[in-house]
Length: 546
Image (cartoon, rainbow, N blue to C red; front, side):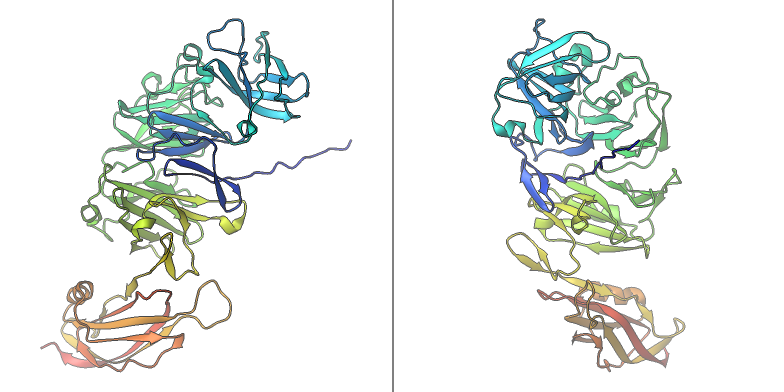
């Protein structure tokens, strides 16, 4: 017997929100606006999550759906509170009597004297001129369904569709109600999860499993909708700041001063347990997972990591950046902190952006070296969101940065300037090599007689540009801290200059006598880049410190 296997192709689409508009990736690398999706408030907090080939947008009292899978049928025959016209329930199979097209109903909404039915079209194309559509409600309900289609404008049937996120058919008596406001959302175990209602900041709400339109918490089955105040798992008892799902294994509630974890399903034996009662998480997107399942987040004391499998939470900045919280002085009311894992460059990026003007302070944590590298970007590029997009076309797979000016940006290893929209801005970069003792102990001095620098580049091919030029400074002092402070404060260097081109450069023959030596490399010239392969010096004993 022959078997016909049809390929099921997974298509990823990037969805963005900026300046009150919603865009989606229609062609690889290109965004277009979703029709009528102009009713969001991007001056308020906003988050999105994917569920069943749809995007759910939570924006306070504004809850919306961008539907990329369903066909939309419109009719004037199904009206609210009309016993003579029956709405199809979820799962009903509808058939067009003229076209023969078949649809599996997913969602229905009746309002303003008309109804829209959304569902997956299995076959055919419905005739929207005036076709009669019939069916028998699913789940054993024998009630017949019959309605006539409206003639719709062409764009009304084009996907994606944009509509309000409500319970099924706005039927609150059967399907319950969504919270009045929500600023947090995610998908967990096939359930839409909402939280962040300002009037109930410690509460969480979950839809029915595999049915994001049902919030009737009175049901009593393993897939029942459930909320924190009527579940055995219970409420968190703290202000929920973020929802962090990990596959279908667990859901972390990051709260203002504590962290909790929901294991399993709350309607079927799940448990809510505390992970940490002293550390909280800053905001909705102040976290990310790396490729090994380790969780990184900005907490009450800086940047933390929780190893996969709920290992002990560890501070990464306690020793490396002990004053980071005081220095940044951030508040959820004035700043946004976002984190993202860069699969290409193997590191975690933490971005701190002031909402009022886009000024930012960022930290790259390199997983290969275990070191932190501070960065700042132009105000126009101030990161409001970070997302690693595993695009179908690998040319566009990268860590994406949603910026203050509404642009979506990414890091480009070949670019020599920052893109600030209409123009470019020179990159001001510098590196201070580890402060070096010039003698074997603290009682003696050494004397640097020459220094040789080898700049990178010169080979054919590769992803990076050859070095254009790099400036250098030499500083000395009786202790390492003094040398570092001089460099940070911009003190006059003992020796400075510029090295141009690639390869081994002519020796720097400045003689420097002292206990410690500092060497700074920098470049702030437009359309230039630099990299160093090696720095080597000759040092001779110079006697005791006087």
